Length: 70
Image 1 (cartoon, rainbow, N blue to C red):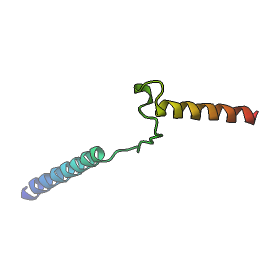
Image 2 (cartoon, rainbow, N blue to C red):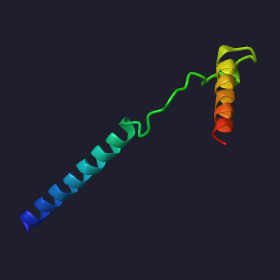
Image 3 (cartoon, rainbow, N blue to C red):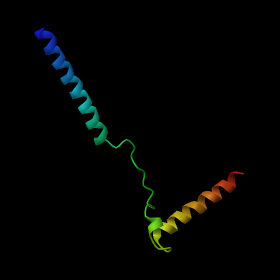
């Protein structure tokens, strides 16, 4: 009977350690790195800002590229 109680306690302790470590590792690691294009604050700035001009330039370039492919 002593061994049954001891192995039960050890089993619960191991389950607790595994669950704790998996929860800890899940919160510590960012699952997806974020890609910053350099125009992240464009919508929050005035209309003549460099970020907004860069975003407009990239959009125009991609429109031209799409037209060339047809």
